[in-house]
Image (cartoon, rainbow, N blue to C red; front, side, top):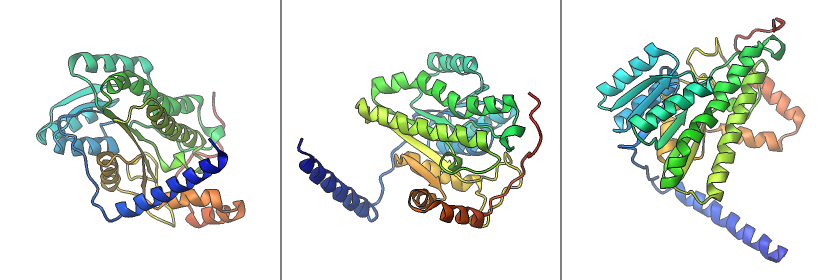
Length: 299
């Protein structure tokens, strides 16, 4: 096409997109039903995964729950059953590809086709890079990103055949913004955000518009995984408010869910503000947490 016509078409699309977004501010958002859907949640024995399972149970979804902790996942399953859901609990170590693939085959054979996949399992080690042990780095990547690929490869084919499904990536604000003493963790979460974006693009290219994707990116959550987190600007989030935002994102097919929502503005500022101004803003936030610093790795 003519470059000038291409530019005009782009400008017309841009204006239409802004008008559409403006109108949506005043139009009630339609929420989809997840009743009867088979939902698989990794890391369901604790924190966000556990609370997310409860929300799906309240909405009459059928549940498959995975966690490395037997007691935790069974407790979650029992509460979901009390809420009226059909539940299947599995003990799965999401750092091990073989366990993921084996459990996925059991689910497909004995239970059915997963139509909503919530990749929630995650691990973190707060330490400077040289203090972080080799096995800790490997585990963060195995759980925080590689597990997402193994589970998605297991359940995506049926979703594509049906052109129906939803893949949820629980990432972190650390997948967009870096912080000291979390080099490996931030790297794994940047990978998770990249996985979500690339998968979303690929599904669009393949014409699979019935398969939705959502990525959750919260700041610190009060789950106990990070010890004594604090920040001057904002607060440590409670699990319930994070899961409320996640469920709203899933039910309305939002692609990216920031908690708090103003993180999207902060992301824009990283592209617009000069480096010195960004460094000053980082000092203002004064983010703190307990971390191992200055201990040489033993590997």
